[in-house]
Length: 334
Image (cartoon, rainbow, N blue to C red; front, side, top):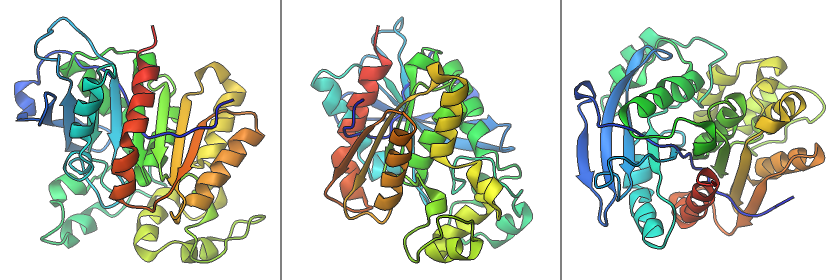
């Protein structure tokens, strides 16, 4: 059993060049990786979505080579640009490859504020479109008629990447990672779609959502939706409520530790490798510890570490190299 540090990252490989309909725009990175922006249709959401793709340095010069793929998920109130523009992930990957890390394609999708799950409620699509702020993400890309965010990533996005890029279309060569809301998404997507992903990493993830957000104590022996609501900040509760629902059954069905235990009992050979870290001043630290303890108590394994820091980009930028290296090592095992 290994209890060490981890980062949320997803690996995969892409084939071919972006289709004309994707209308890609490219930006050469500071060292040698290339960032490509695509749009594609998601049947699961009923809308077109944007995705940023980091292509490794050798991608253009070795047209016969195929690559593992890592999917990086953003947090709440973020978008597909966060990892590159704020997290400086492209620069981090360039540096790691220069120092010998195996190359992989890294995919950064737009997950809205959907928690990367199928919502318990359909949502108010007309109301979302009607009430979008002029300074917010446009309604045409944010307001979705069918909030199936898990299928969007695991089926629509992965399928698009495997068609458009020289990826290795094999679960053993795909990983997923994320921060905060994206950390939740990475762990649960890897467990709910073990045929797609073989490894998942979470930074400061929402890994025990029913344990609350720390503002007030939540009962541990009974489900109390009012205490749960008060424990989360109003802006986060506004995202959690439609996705997770109002009853204990819907929350349990989306609980990361429960999902891992369920997969282990049915298909233990498909349980993904898991990597989790969290800052010691992070308000989500109790939930990360609860997830760790639940997994270890049930006989599970994960790489876990705590570092000084809080719930912010200073922390995530500092520890991104650890998750990237961890995923790259796992996704390139012969």
